[in-house]
Length: 201
Image (cartoon, rainbow, N blue to C red):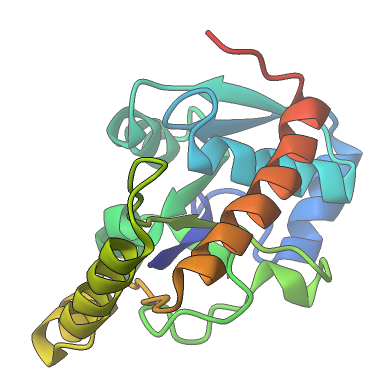
């Protein structure tokens, strides 16, 4: 399953669109603080991908989890956060945070009218995703049985509705599809990690 993130700013921030944000950031290099829930988290590398593709200079401010990062964005101590929609949707609905764009290739039904970053940065895509794996050497028939049972569970209407409420898209497929996703994502995010100079802690 895959879930989008949303690019958020405090309502007092002057930019109301992604192009305005990029223009402001380029005019004020190093003066925008980009919060995240910690070094190497999905929100962090999502922001680093944005920096890499736009050439803007933002200061990364890592927090110990999304909660403190959102608190400081609400308070104006930081200016931007790429966050999971599920954890910030209430603040968006209450007008306490302004969404500029969604990070997935497709818009989110939870945020009608909010564009995708790729409208302004062609090829930009970032999301949190989850999958199930098994130890190397597990028999193919067991893998196939697990895949079939999981696919059946994910097709259940109650589960689909619950995931939709969280803004999550189900990526049902073959084990080989998941293997390709792992390879592609490792290559993509490896470039971002190298760009950002991230090191294991």
